[in-house]
Image (cartoon, rainbow, N blue to C red; front, top):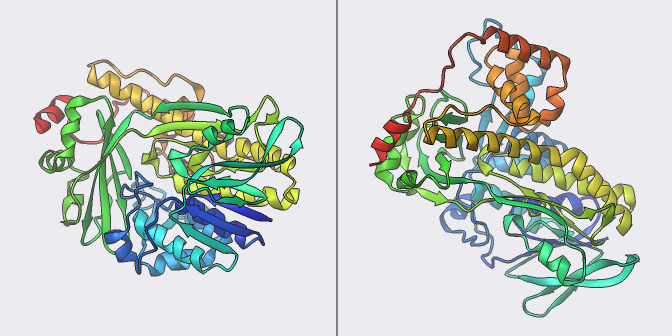
Length: 469
């Protein structure tokens, strides 16, 4: 079948590769006109991607994505390595458990990771060389075209209209245009019912700086909560890495982190993170805020709002990006679409229904888990800012996730269970139903009942405000 993909970010490119290699004729439309750079380094130095707000913010190619690429697109995995991607093992260093014996699952916990421009270069070069893919850059979509209905009273999408008035027709339109997707507006403009949508500011602001040199050794979790801020430290490619401080958007004093001096003093005040500054800075502090949490469902009251149209990855659902799962979840979603097209032979009503069902069963749990963790963390930050005791998690899912993360240092198998979730291999909802995990959490909580909590070292609220003054 003929397929139009809107958006040539990493997930759009990956969706195109999966579908083209499954026998479909794919055209990928990208609003940004900048051509593919000549090399990974020039992608970092020169590539202009105004349509991707987070293009130079950290991205992580999680182990879950590495496993998918090895199974489905092994040449891409090889190309990432050849472009200088760093090998990153989430299991190591393992805490000093008495039991240091390896487990069969350990081989799943490593990945190759790279800066976003370098990673996108690898996928874009593969897409532009794929015989069944037509790449068109500098094409902005203005709206959708319709064709004969396949369900009475439900619009059938039959292509797109560009801002230049060009009409491009296809059997299926796939919106992979990311966080800035206009898919809902395009659908209502052709008479479709609005999709179900949940939308809110994610509540966080990000301050990132990149470095080059000898990769620092890890002394703390990749994502570390320290009082009213969090630190994210990620290896990149070709001897680079990033350090990100993220805070509550409304925390006005912490906006001083956009200045290099204050940002640097803050990282230096964190004993397990200060050594990440031991390199050559290659950027200023890159600030980003205004990121939304959004979840859409295109089947409402048991009926699709349209046929011939699906949304994948961030165009479907997106959250606070600090957990680094967006690319992996997006690729898992794209693989579901490929499998749905195989199983339904492209029949529009069945595609709409089956893709919604599989999205809810296999992809939505990742969204709901991240929202639960973010809301609990935001409530903790607000309490610490106001000098209050942080409240307990307010729902069963956040209680379960935080209990697992809090107990992961108690036993090597609990540690691995938590990393299995962090690495985007298995949804945490499934992990929490395992009897051994539930029993391990109960035992860990009982053992830690009377022990004082041991937060990661770093500035408390008063010390942080002094650093930023």
